[in-house]
Length: 324
Image 1: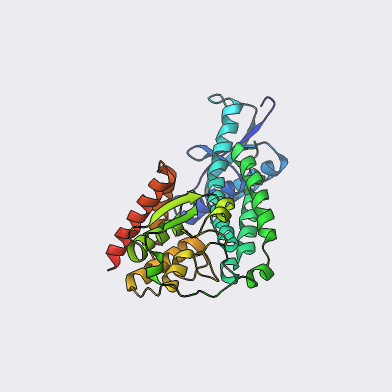
Image 2 (image 1 turned 90 degrees about the horizontal axis):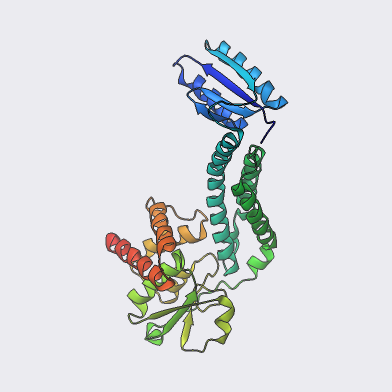
């Protein structure tokens, strides 16, 4: 970090109008500046940043305020590595929102792979490209190459390959018919799904034990091991499983329709599960985000897959009670 120089920008503007102060803050933030203290901001010394400071001083004066900037080789209370780390920490905050958006993209890709057609695929490329553009803008401000940015870059490359591999032709070719089933044929069965259960699997397991098979047992396997199962096992929320995504229906909706469940509260829960799992804006419920956060916490903190499933099922039991 030796040899790095800095630009310190100082300003004060009248308290009114507030919009003047906000406009200055947005311009500094957009340039990647970090606030050191009060109205003092710091940027790496480059021609582009030097010119920005010149323009900002002119703008501050035009607003009836005072502003100036200085070129320095050191800040007495911080060494250069500490300043650089402050910039990295700021960029890591920006990257977190991109990471959350990528989780949504990954869930949508998973849904499409399991059988969701055009509606699940709706806007996938646009949503990914928007996140990619946002990432590239933040990357330009990552002056000291944070580890979070490097990790996110690798993750984006992997997701990009998957997004490109999804075509409308593949979507249209998937089966869309949901065949009727009889509850009597699904008693005391072993229900098998993928490891690390989340929204659709937690909700489907609750639905199965509540309305289909009160003695249902649940097991977790890798999808590659599904072919070795015999007919005693019922597979759900797995690619090629007996109950999985069909058309624009998530697994929960598939089970509801296959068994002809008419419960009004279950229908409402189905819309929430669809919204959380497929994310196609087909339904909107105010409690959806809160439920999603709770289930994310369960998935993160659970000691095992069975523990996560049971806790997730408990959430849906409480949700059902609130709807009846």
